[in-house]
Length: 145
Image (cartoon, rainbow, N blue to C red; front, side, top):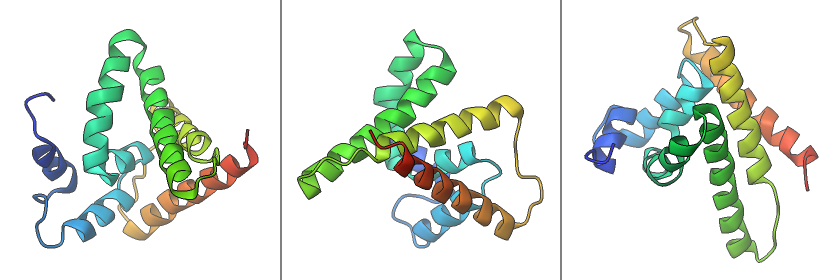
């Protein structure tokens, strides 16, 4: 990981070099048609994912079980999103940390129980991932602290 640049990391995740024509479309397509929600997140934002892995997940994984390190990385990502929201809105809204915590828990459950999309139909995968994003967002509004 240390010797891999974020550009190389992003190219592996999206299938295209950073800045190339069609990169955003390819990234969206590969994310939303991924065979699992965990894979969706591996592809979704390669730049942010690279730095989360480098600065949060890997250090946590050295001290904690892999599943806890992964879940805390999701929660930490949510805290970062909440901090940006605070800076922009000048008002603290505790939304992203619970939302990302729920999504992280789902990724862990998906891994634990071996849940994967096997149909090969892009429309089904897009609906699956969109439903998970919307459903966990809705649940996180109920978890307001």
